[in-house]
Image 1 (cartoon, rainbow, N blue to C red):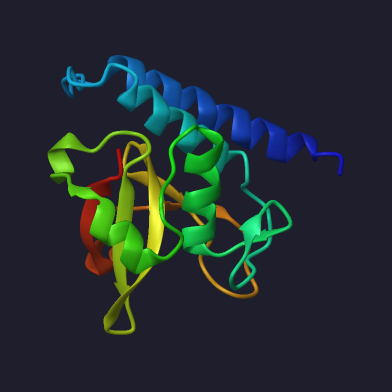
Image 2: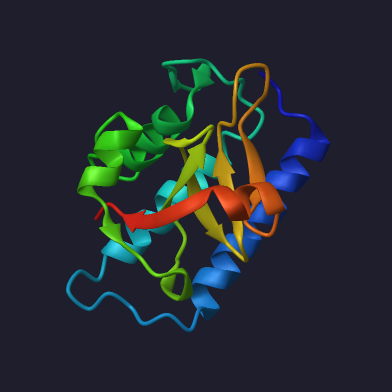
Amino acid sequence: MIAQPARLFRVFSLAITVLAISACASNPADTTSPQAADKGQRAAMIALDQVGVPYRYGGSTPQGFDCSGLVQFSYSRAGVTVPRTTGQLWSVSTTVDEDDLRAGDILFFRIDGKMSHVGMYLGEWRFVHAPQSGSNVSVGSLESPFYRAALIRAGRPY
């Protein structure tokens, strides 16, 4: 598939933003694993590159993703093995305070009364996710009242 110029521009702009935020972030580096933050950043960039791919229930490939499939695919390509389901991702992730969020952290959302959705943090309160049937992988904002109210936890899987 040939990417549309507008899509390439959006993806490139978001990629530059993520890299700039990561380079300038005031969050301390993880000194126990110097490559850990890089893996999260790489996973976030891989997820961001999937913007526009259609949502597909159970999907975990560039032909279609559901929310947890996007996270698993992106981390796998970044060299980190994570589980497939939202619940399993919750179980293996270390809780992260909102003040310590960095690119690649997993955001867990309560939709329709249960924890059932994940996205990957990009920086500047933005995240990439596969929202629902009939939509495409897209970038959302934690400043949106819907996602702000639905956010229940952030976690780091590495």
